[in-house]
Length: 98
Image (tube, rainbow, N blue to C red; front, top):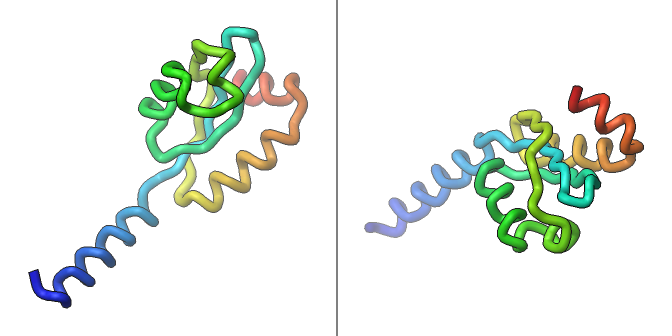
């Protein structure tokens, strides 16, 4: 591969990375608490949570069950929404799920 081709491959990879959807998700932990996070692969992230490697918070509260997810066009918008939801009360989060 020529140096020019390597740069093109890198740019295509960056475009794909930027254009892939991101998700805000909520899981119910075994202790009945709710965890909010973001990911670009919900099923893989839930699996990580259930294997104790997803997040420090969920590592001792598993297993977790997915109760909500919403799709975003990019990581930035998912992160803003995650921040918003994390500020909400438990009751408001549960209303979102219903």
